[in-house]
Image: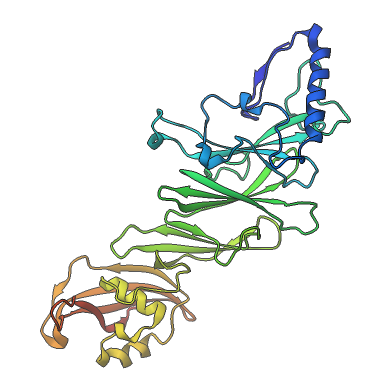
Amino acid sequence: MRGFASDRWPGLRLFPVPAPRMSLFVTLLFVLLATASCNLFKGKEPELPVPLIEYIPDDWQLLDAERRGKLEFQGVNIDGDEETEWLLFFYYDNIGEDPETRGPVGGIIYDAQQDTEPYGLPVFEEQVIPFPYQPSAFLVPYRLLPDWRPDKGQGYLAETNVKWEEARVDKSNKGNDELIVIGYSPDDVPTRLSLFRWNGAPNGYGVAHFPGSYRVSTPGRKPGQPVEAVLTKDNLNERSHLCKQTEHVRQGNALNFSASDPTIVFCQSPTGKTAPEQPTYPEAVVLAWLITRNSELVLPDSQPQVTQLVPQSPKRVVNISYWGEAETADTQNEALSRVIVRTVIETDFGLLTYEWKVDEQRPKIVGESSRWRIAAVELVQ
């Protein structure tokens, strides 16, 4: 008999068992699985039904002990049956032993099943295991992320660490039916969110995956509650620390989310609806006024013209561009220099392009910094 390692079910390695000892092997395995199945919920920490740690690939590096808990494998139950599944997080594509060279974080779940033959899952060539009428005869591995099955080529779980919990979305389900995995980048910033649902033995776990290069958040959600909405922010990497924000809202109980059109916000604003009181750069002054309508950001004599031409806050800010260098201004309004900022915003009348004249105001007292203020605005199209 030959053993094998399967690409489709990573981490599962079955070793050859001599034919004369097969009967004894099957009997011992049955006793081990049946005994463990009876003891799964007696202690605070369920016992592994088989020593799965021996079967993970050598090139997977488990998360540090303080990150993964006391068990390498952690018990979950999100498929509606009475059996515990076993969750494992690991680093893959590692380069050397230095923690700074570890690859991204992936995850896998081992699921206890009865009869896997109809799904084409691994079996011995000469005899099918499981035992046909026993509850825990097979532990079948299913990738979470990374994966390359249909609808699962989105990415990975985290860069440095993960936190996870279970949530009940479908109240008709027997148990928790969704696994929530929050992925972290350096400095413990959450930049990925993955939601997993059981799609049946042939397909494994479906996923809704939300990456944000700056941050991912679920505003208003409490621990244990299902994720109804996700905000993703992607850093635009420019001087006013602006981000592109997208809101994803769940549709029904399944892993279906609708995404809003992206809008430009200040990265540090939790929901994108706030702004600095005294923005440093001229483009930040314009964005802050569009978001908050703070009258202090507009020169007093310019208030009527600006508010008349832009009477309401936009539905979203599509684009902001500006001159990188300020022009020297005349002495009117005590301006030191001027920058032209152009914005594209979405309004009730569609997309409109505005050109803003923003003047640098001379400081009036020692220790005060110069401030940029909106001097005029013009509708370009």
